[in-house]
Image (cartoon, rainbow, N blue to C red; front, top):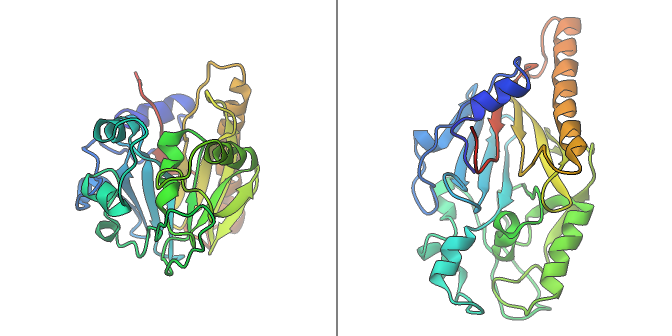
Length: 289
C-alpha cells in the first residue's frame, strides 16, 4: 500500500474531499507503534498501519473507534515476497510464533490486541477452542493472497466479513491445496455481504461497495466512524472492462457525503460527530503519480 500521494488523489476525484494524509514510513510489522504509524480523528478514532506500507501486499490496517469501543482490521494479508524469501516452495512454517519472530506476522500485543491468533493443530477437522478476543471483525477487500493469506492464522472467534463470491474464491484456494498451517481456513467465522449492505459493528457502520480489479469480488469500504468518514479503497482500477463498478464506489462516497451534509443542514447540529466530508482516505496504489 503506497499512500504518499493520497491527498492529491482524493482532491483530483472530488475537490471537496478532505483527506487525512498518511506519510509513508517503514512498515510496523513486529515493531512498536509510534506517532508516524497512527492517524487520530477528533481523539475518538485511531487508524494504525500494521502492514502493507511501502511494500506490495501484507495489508493489515487496524481501526479503533473509542466512542463505540470497536476494533476492526481491514484485510489480513502477508508480504508474499518476504514469505518466499524465508521458505522454499512447499515448505511450511513450524508455527505461528515462528512467523511472528520472522516479522511476517505482527506482534499483537504491540497494538493492544488480545488473542489475535488461533491455536493451530495439523488437523483439517480440528475443533477450535480459541480464547475471547477484542477484535470485532476482519474485513477482507478481495481474494488476492496478499490481502487474505493471514486468515489462516487468526482466532476463530473473530468474525470475518467479506463478499459472497470473495469467500467462494478463498474457499477454492483452501479446498484445492494440501492442509497446512498456511492453508488453514477451516472453522472461520464467515459473515458475508453484498454491495450496499450496511454492516453495523456496535455503532460503527461499514458499507462495502464493489470496485473493478484484476480479480472478481473486490470491494472498497465506506466507514462511518465517530471521528468522521473513513474510506478504504482496497485494490481498484479505472482502466479495466468493469470500470463502472469503481465509479459506483465513487458515486456512493459522494452520496454518503451529501446525505451527511443534508442532515447537518436540517438538524442544525449533528447528534453524532460525523461531518459531511472524508476525514481519512486509505488508498491502494503501486504506482501513483
